[in-house]
Structures are given as structure tokens and as C-alpha cells.
Amino acid sequence: MNVCKEVDQYILEQEEAIQPLLNDVRKVIRETIPEAEERFSWGMPTYWKNHNIIHFAPAKKHLGIYPGPEAVVYFADVLKEKGYGSSKGAIRMPYKAADLVFLKELTEYCWKVNQ
Image 1 (tube, rainbow, N blue to C red):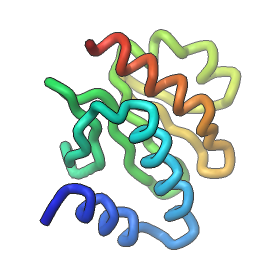
Image 2 (cartoon, one colour; image 1 turned 135 degrees about the horizontal axis):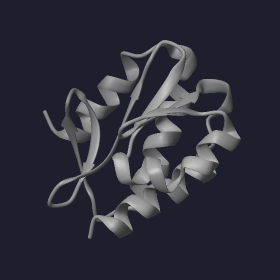
Image 3 (cartoon, one colour; image 1 turned 180 degrees about the vertical axis):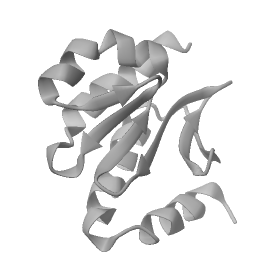
């Protein structure tokens, strides 16, 4: 099975209410870094070019975005302002507060610093 179909299936296996958001997240990442290869790593959609750039995965009450520890430190003030939780390399966006404009900025940062 090709990865694109695998990611489609992965999204379809999630709760119906969050599928539109997951599709939007995928679209934002793919449009922001079209040079990145879509694959799976650690059981989640991953965008890769020579190494992992960014991942995403749904959780019970939030969307997990995994940009790496440098991005979490770089965007610490924004994360605090938005009320997003974070830990080393992970950002927790509550579903109702997911910000796709911020996701685009975060993805651009990850791409830039990982080149």
C-alpha cells in the first residue's frame, strides 16, 4: 500500500468529528513543505527529508504535533499565549483551539532549521 493511502486510512480510523481537522493539518503540512516525503514514523504521519521534520497524531482531547525540541523552545511564548501544552518535542493543541495558521508557521520553521 502506498503511504498516501495509508495516511488516508489512518485519518479514516480516527473519530469522525476530528477527521476534517486531521485532513486540514495534513494539507497545511503538505502544502507548506511539498519537498518532504510523507511516511509513517512512530505510528503517525511523518514528513521527512533526510530525517524527520514534523509529525502529527490525534489524542483523546488534543492534537499532538511533534516538531522536535528546538521548535518547542523557539515557540515557547506563542505556545503559552495560545494555552497549548508542550513537552520535549511535542505540542498539545486542544481540538477547538487548533490554529492552522500557526501550524503553517511552525512547519516552515521546522523545514528551515532542518535543512
